Length: 160
Image (cartoon, rainbow, N blue to C red; front, side, top):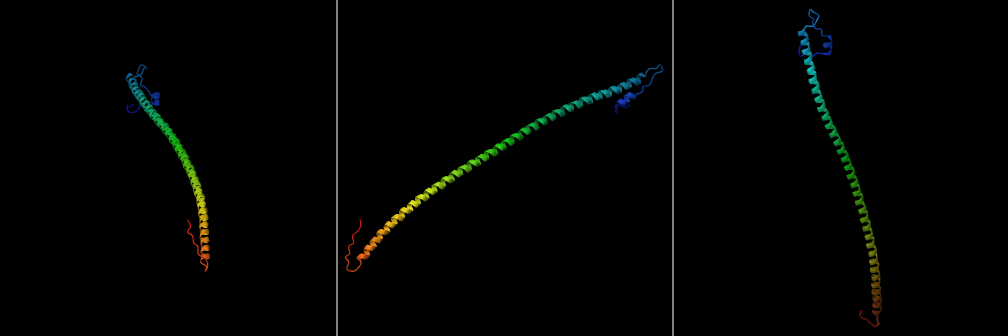
């Protein structure tokens, strides 16, 4: 067998070694076969060690990715929680703003109603005073009409 081709378990099981005239095996053939077997076994041990190293490296990388995944999940949960809290705070703030606006609106309506009542009172007072002045003027006009009649003495007294 050549050294570039590895021995398989079937090759080993079917290997026929030449015998010597005394019934033993040819020493050089046995030594050559054992060298091939040892080389292949050594290569298998090296390959196995290399694969174990690769496996360990891949397991570390997998653990790192799992850790990153867990960190990302936690960050996502935290972001969702923060978004929920922000949304709730914004909703609460909106409710507070609305409530404040309702209170202000009610107060403005009440103030305006009070102003309307005050204006109604002022209107009534002005109407009363206007009627009173109109009565005074009417009385003066009536008095003036009576004095402007012929033969009637005119007695006009200034009012204080």
